[in-house]
Image (tube, rainbow, N blue to C red; front, side):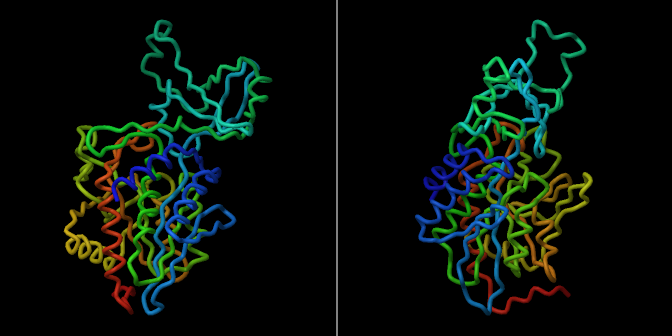
Length: 359
């Protein structure tokens, strides 16, 4: 299983897919699902949906993760060929300078770099200043607006950090868009070994980084009883994160007991207690460690999905990840494998007539 997870994760991380432009990622996922003998469809927004019918006496389950990644959109091409952009999603602006990027133009992918002023010419005032996304320029080497446009780059062109993968010590992987191509790899692997039981809708959603759009559309169409969302969980085992919790990279999959964004949306998830118990029982039964998270500043599209119809029983699950929303994020393959096994155990333990009403 771990070798397959690694293969799928690497392929997905090397495939660009800015929010609203996930088609190439969707093609990789649909090919892997087809290899597993599972048919899939794509809705109008771009979500990939694969449904496995099960026992109608059991609550239906929507198991989902997002395909898209954060990045930029071109807003202007200067006469000298340098490119100005707008940020798309929660880009960490302090991590932008000097990063390699890929511009996904109409004539193919074009490499570029986010410019960083020469250190020798940096003033004392500039030394510690972090540029915002509208202030940066991207250099593709073309030298003129005409040359840039001839390469297929124009206003609205998607820009992502250059897709790359670094294999670190042990089973740790660093690179672009671990958030949430690791979640996609987990669901693809789960598709290869779904236990018999409830009807399961596997959803690979779009535009999560752009205000949590895609999963809500899928949930409205599918009307599940249970929604299980897969995404990163903030690893807190480094000195800069130590006061935020007890989530350890390599320590196994986790569940969220509380999330709240607190930045304008005022949204989050307090999970359904029956699903928390289900996760705990499955982890114990499968001999898995189960880590716990409670965070402010974290938001997933489950916050919207839980309110569909008469309400959906909801739980966020995930894998520890370091350096979120930077050009190089880090996860551990062992955590991804544990997450697959946890989901298998949970689905196998859902009883017919499971009571989801509260109180």
